Image (cartoon, one colour):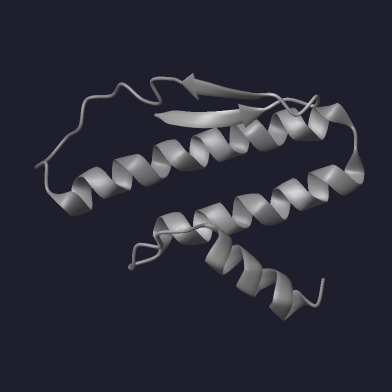
Length: 97
């Protein structure tokens, strides 16, 4: 998995990590593999939220929780969304923020 990390100073850095090494039982169909990927993504989201909560900034953590929920919704969506900004913007408008 690859992602861009933005530091507090605004510096961008390309990061990568192996997100899961696990034997997959059953067939290697899209549905079965999808369950594994969703579970790994949930684990990563939970780990990152725990780190954010430890930082102690309640307002920032609340924003992270909203972002995490948006990611969970996108991960489980039956339709692929090409740009995260589209559903994020729709969510912001619907909440009146």
